[in-house]
Length: 227
Image (cartoon, rainbow, N blue to C red; front, top):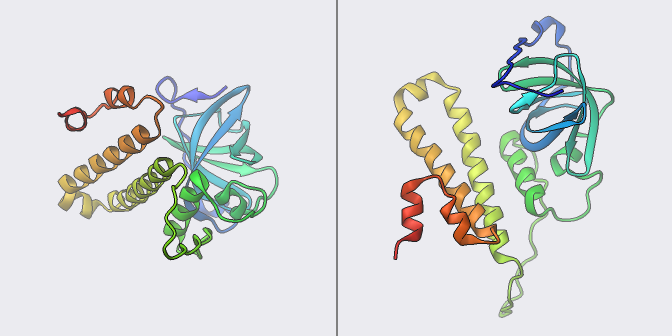
């Protein structure tokens, strides 16, 4: 059973540093999900190694429980070893390949697109590693052709920018001096990320009018519906 923290928050801090022998981890921000006892919940993978990960999410099973971590085409059995608020540590039953989890695919198969591309570029920004995204082919001079799914591609690029900004915000809010000196700017930063998120959702919505009406930011909704 996955416990919602709003109902039950069993916080167990990570074990002492001396007991945390583990493989080197890569800081990431990847969409994934966990499954335990026929229940599932969305999570973000915040760091990852061949043998374990730190995940962030709204609900977790009890400490010591077994679970399955899913991301696109890859999954792995794991055990929850600690939880502290919205974050938890898991230890894999076997070893994984970090690059496969970044791409969400078992093996590389050409250029990455969509959410895979977003996550791969995000991992590059976070880690400073070599890009995992193949460069786009150079346009043919003079060729003008309709671009299929252009609006979806634009939404993906907006999502990429938003997530990059969110990660920058996470880094800045980890510094108490930055928070103290620039808390108003950080609030504006967060609002900007929310605006980008709404725009990306509207671009990919089947009913854009309904998507605009669902925007929770009153000022943005007013701007989008002005005559």
